Amino acid sequence: MGDAGMSWDVETDVVVVGFGGAGCAAAISAHDAGARVLVLDKESGGRAGGSTRVSGAVWFDNQDPERAAVYLRSLSAGRPIPEPVIEVWARETARNSAWMESLGIPIGLAVAPPAEFPDLEGSDVMRGWIGVEGRMGDGLLWAALSDAVRARGIEVRLGAPARELVTDDGTVLGVLAETADGSPLRIRAARGVVLATGGFEADPDMVRDHLRLTDPVVWGTPAATGDGLRMAVKAGADLWHMSNMMTLPGLRAPGYEAGFYTAFPATNAFVYLGFDGRRLVNERVALGHGHARINGSYQLFPTTPMHIVFDESARRAGPIVPGRERLAVGWASLIEGYEWSADNSAEIGKGWIHRADTVEELAELIHVDPEVLRATLDRYNAACAAGSDDQFGRPAQTLAPISEPPYYAFTSAPILAWSNGGPRRNEHAEVLDPFGATIPGLYAAGNVSSTYSWCKDGGFHIADALAFGRVAGSRAAARTTDGQ
Image (cartoon, rainbow, N blue to C red):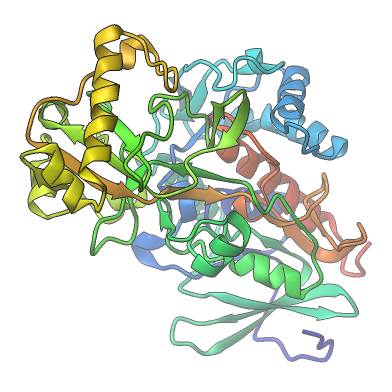
């Protein structure tokens, strides 16, 4: 929208659109650099905070920027990231922990898992994940960052969705937003606008067009509907990484906004089946944050709906969805407050999971040829008895038979944790047009414009949001009103 002569309702130096991790980092950094800052978020009350609020809320412990840069190049797998972006990412992610401590936020080692892609050069940089109070999830990171924003007296307007960027001759001047009652709100941003609106995983049309998922179910915030991406495109932005994402096996529950991650933490007696009733893959394939090594290369997984079948021994072993005490992550758990039953009986009773006394009856419930399902389970059970899965190479220690009735099944739509693509940006978090030129006054950070072109390890998304949130905020604050 071009309107240099617009009358403004509010004037400030930097407008940050989005109150998640990247938005908080940008607001704090811009404020601490001397700018007047206003933060907008379309959600209100207990729903604000973006996916950061319901994420694992940890960042990887980067103690060696040079090795981190090597690892990021390896993870891009032929989808190169611009070297200046890699260099700033490696340097700034190594500063995340010190920056958090400078805010007075207590941090510590939350967990030290092995690298998710150990065969890739540079993976030795993965020493663990750092979290607030040394803990994962539970909204701790967002609570700490949002408190730091408010402690600085930065104005935050919740329930105020941004609708459009105001531009003049290609320069971003401000934002058109709405108040909580739907009235228009025209905000002048003298130095710049930072888009930190999250991804587009909750917009079914964009997900179908760019990620090729036909029936998406979100794991994080339902507010991630691609708002910032649309605003940036209208202002002339190019796009990057639009086909990249993270999905998980999971279950849709009627009446809930988000899905449940079905990890089967207490049992191995389950299989993944196609709609033809045949096994699809090694069900215990090592899942990175969105990718698994299948047939010799790292591929997005899962990308299609599938049937998940298990038996009475698996039901009895424990919840197929990790409880909050084990994994305090996800919208359904943290915001909607659902607690999965310890033995899965409540969810079976609700009809979320089919139950049948025989394999043949189960086949009818999931619309699979009974003979095919029987043959599939017989072959799998024979592999368990032999201790060798000659079909997909599932590790012997993870082979557990599906032989104790009753039998259970549900149809799993991939749970979409986040998208990665959005407006292309440079190492300064400045948004670029299709010819590589900057769009003056426009910046982006976090999942609206993730650094990652392909694979990403644990703690990488939060690390990226904090790092480029700071870069965006400080860069915007340093921009003079004449755009220099």
